[in-house]
Length: 150
Length: 87
Image (cartoon, rainbow over all chains, first blue to last red; front, top):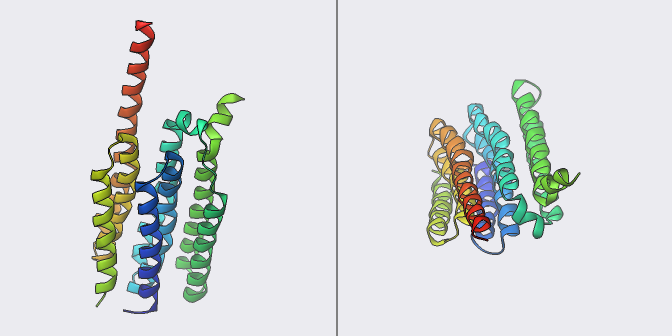
């Protein structure tokens, strides 16, 4: 058990635990935001686990999650757009905080691995994670309804 | 050697799976199932089975919620159409 795995344990326990709590209770707008946050919190956790286990191949999981997580949220945003238009979620603070956490994890891991293929992959995962998260968050808070209006 | 990590992720899976059963509304259930898919993928990774985790991510976090939401969407539209005809 090294520092990376300890950090991943704490981050996953607190972060994913909070999203499970958020998705299981409360109004619909809170649940969709929590679902969006679950992938954004789990992806940096997978990066930390990959570093902790010393297996760069585990980065593929984080890459897939960074790609598919926002896609899953977009499915909800599209199919629930009528419900969400009446009661749109506003979660700018949480979204930015989680995006900042992802950026910090990616930058720290880049500094540790040094230049090379792994670092390029890490930067790609970070860009996909933060970009996808911001797009999905915007779609949840009324992107689809706004595009339908005009 | 990584027992605390395994215990934490197992707890996450147990709590989210219980929530998926306890939540009654299908839309809310689809949201909980998406989070459960991510938690299960984390569990498989922690247990050193990343290939299983990869397929679990694809199926659990996108495909299952998509299928559920599409069927909910279709049922709702059909109900709306029936109400419109009755009027």
